[in-house]
Amino acid sequence: MNFTQKHFLNNVFVKVALLLSLILILLLNSIITARDSNFYLVFSVVLCVIVVIKSEFIVFVGPLIIYGLFSYNFIDPMYFVDSLKFYHEAFVGSYYGEGHLTTLTAVGDVYYLISTILGSQDPKILVLMNLVLHSLTVANLWKCLNIKTKYDSARVKYCFVIFTFMSPLILFHTPLLLKDFFSLCIISYAFLAFCKYQVSARKYLLFLAFVLCLISIPFRVYAPIYFVMLVFTTGYYSRLYFPFLLFLTTSMVLFFGSETIFYLVYSFAAIFFVPNFVSFSNWIDSPLSMLEGIMLIAFFFSCITYNKKLNVDFLKTAIYIFWLIAITYAFTSLYRVTFSAYESQGGYLADNFFRKKIPVTYILLYFYSFVMSKRGSF
Image (cartoon, rainbow, N blue to C red):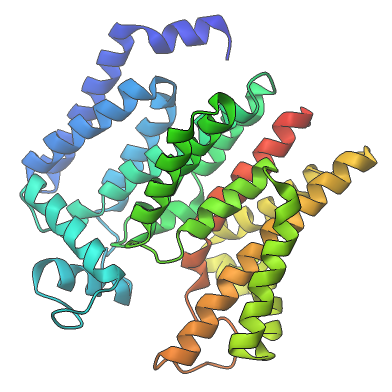
């Protein structure tokens, strides 16, 4: 970004005009759809805070909000079974009975708190919070990218913002009542604290990252694994990656049996082939998500250069990250099949892995952007 662009974005009058425009759009939408205007005023204030803190993202936040306002009028936020559970937990009562602690409890409590602040229990209003969480997550990862590649390609960093902000797979899920965006936002703050620790060596930042990982657990039990995946991208203590992954894999084989290998193979394939772009019906239902899946594969090959040493480093790190993703996918499937009433439908992916790819999309886009930015290959 050149000086003129920075000057434009940092101009206080331009900021105020853009923020007022966003508020006007929100209020007009509330009138058109007969929604609670009190919510939109509060939501506008939250957006103002984001834009003031992350002024350079105004260009991206604007289209994102417009998308949210219009798409949320036509998409049922209770589309998933889990969405019904979260809403029941928040406003009806404990879904599994009193004294039963699950991730539903934390998510239900948070949605109840949000509804109290906004004065509405309308799920279409509650899920707009996902846009705020998504915006903060991208902004935090962008700051991490700046810390780790301070003097490298700015073009790659801004492409990262565009591709992640407007990710079809992620945006498909933002209008739905889900827990994923809460845990991912918390983990993005944990990783930001970790990146700052690497630069400043201030130990309280490492402690803060640890605490944030603990806070993410009530929303997604294995959310700290996302943090570990992001740490893998930095190469920090890389000599420990292989023993750590080998320990996890061996533990799973000993606990679940030899079938773990089949789950790992299927899970590794799911990283690239969920959504399955070989299926013609998927191209009809969600063509943009199909293109994004192919794009992620293309980005992988874009990270390969003619430098043999750089390729070895990249491929080694990529294998470690893919391996950890496969372990996470396999473990969730194995646990669900072994300890719940889930009945396999003839495959090894015992879960909605289209949704499970939300965090993977953030992480892979960050990793590929980090590599290409360091090499200036974009």
